[in-house]
Image (cartoon, rainbow, N blue to C red):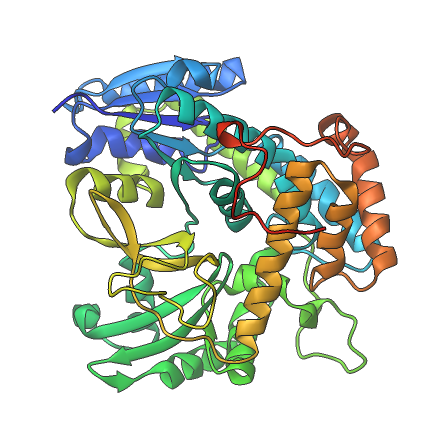
Length: 473
C-alpha cells in the first residue's frame, strides 16, 4: 500500500492537534503514515512539529512529519484533510457574546447558534471554502473532515458549494463512551452495551434521544428519571455550559418526549433560558461564555507542550496523559475498514437500510447521526421520526444555518440580518440589526472587507452557485 497522508490545517489548535499526534504515534492502524501539520503561526507550528517528532521517535510508528505555513503545500498526496482552525477563537467569541448580552441575548457557548454562531461562520467559512477549492484541484479524492464550529453551518456550506468528499464532526457523542454513560446513569452494566438500542439525531448541538431500548425494553423514561434525580439539589456548576444541565435535560424531556443529549449546548438553542419570561424559572438565565477561562485553559495546554518540547517534562508523560480523538478514530475506521459506529454530521440520506435515517426531515437536512464507518466512509443508521414540535425546531435551526451560509457566500449583510431575525434567541428585528452593526464595527479587522459589500465570493469548482443551493431572493 502506498504511504497515506493526513493533513491538519490548524495544527496549533490544541483541542485536536495533540490528540492527532498521539493517535498517529500510538494506534497500529496509522503505522507508516505521514502527518502534515499546517498553521499560520510560525512559533506554534514549530512547537507542534517538534512535539510530533519527539512523540514519533522511538514509538515504532514509522510516521513521517511535515510542517507547512501554507496549506496548499501540504495537500499533494493527502488522503484526509482535517480542518481544525480558528482565528483568536476565545477573543472573538467573547466579543460576540458581550455584544449579544447587551441586547438581551445570552449565549453560554457562542459558537453555534445566535450571533455567536452566525459571526463565527462569517469569520471562518470563507477560508473553509478556499481550502475546499484547493482540495478539488490538488487532491480531489481526499476526505475533508470539518472540525470547525458551527459544525452544521460549515457542513452545509461545503455540501452546497463544493464537490469534495466531506463530513463534519463534534466531540460530544464519542462512541462507545456515549452508550456506556447512559447505561451507567441507569445503573446497568456496560456489558449490556450490545443490547442497548439508542437512537439519537438532530442538528449538531441540538441532538435528541428519540428511542432507548435495553434488551427490547423501553428505558427512555428511566434515563429521564435519572437526570431528574441528579437535578434534585443541583448546584451551580460554575462553567457556563455546565450550569443546571441535569434539571434542564429532565425539563426538556418532559416537554418534548425526547431527551436532549448535548444539553450544555442545546439550552442555548431555545429561548426559555434567556431570562425574559414573565414567570420565574427554576434555574437562572444562561451564564455568558467564559472567554477568559478558555484563554487560560489554552495557555495551560501550551505550557504542557513547551514542557515536552524543552525536555522539562518527559515525552512519556505526553503518551500517558493524552489519548485519541473522535476525528482520528473515524479516520482509523475508514483506513482499517473496521465498521465501527461514530456520530457524524452528514445529510439525512443514504441510510444503511435505504431511504432517510430521519423519515420526517428532508434528505438534505444536515444532521448529526450514528453512522457505520468503513472504507467507503460513513453511512447513517436508521433513526425514526422526530415528534411534532421538535421537528419544527429542527427545521427552524436548519433554515437559520442555510441562510447564514448564503449570506456569507454572497457577502450580503441583509441576508446576515435575516439569519439573525430568524434565530430563536433574537427577540426583534431591531435587535438583529443592532447586533449586526455592532459586531461588524467591533470585528472590522476580520469582517471589514465584506461588511458593506454584496460581492459574491468564489465557490468550489468555479461554480456560480451549487445547483442545490436554496433560493433566498
